[in-house]
Image (cartoon, rainbow, N blue to C red; front, side):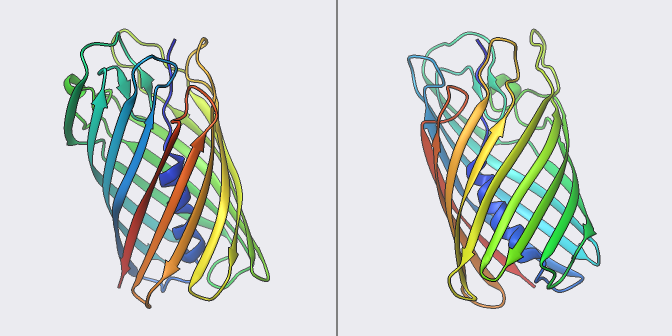
Length: 256
């Protein structure tokens, strides 16, 4: 049975960034890095631990935002768990593999709202290039494609967050992955102009007929230290075999 792994820890951190995005100056650059950790058995008898370190560059101008992520990934486990994909092949001896992960590029267009607006709707297209070494189990070696609609609605200090998306998964040899719908629903509360916290529920369809859907709950905190620096911290709890038993991480962003 195929188990799919999804990183809503990273999604929560990026949702925090998106909530601040409407405050960004036109024509601005930002760089984000951090460390994401997850662990779980994913329905098997042996656990898999994944460390994920992304380096993301983003450029925003008018209604557009362009982003490129180049990650480093380290996986310890039986060798048959692929991040954001699931179980491929049979379990082997427990090993540790590391290297460059899959490069992800995205373009976002602001359909409604903008700087200072109470309601914001964005449309995003993403491409995950199969650049990770599939012989080490760091990726599938295939490209994935996704499109999603993001919405933010702010009333006083509360902001509601929502995402609806569809992802087309590339099939590595010997597999038949299903394309999936996914979504998130959550909120954040601004305690001060610099500090926000919130909760996000993340759900995604199963990628195989016999697999499980993914369900995760993420608690996050976002802190602005200056006009240029901000950080996000988050913890996660999974509720199905397609989700990690637990995880968390931190990210820091510099804007200029």
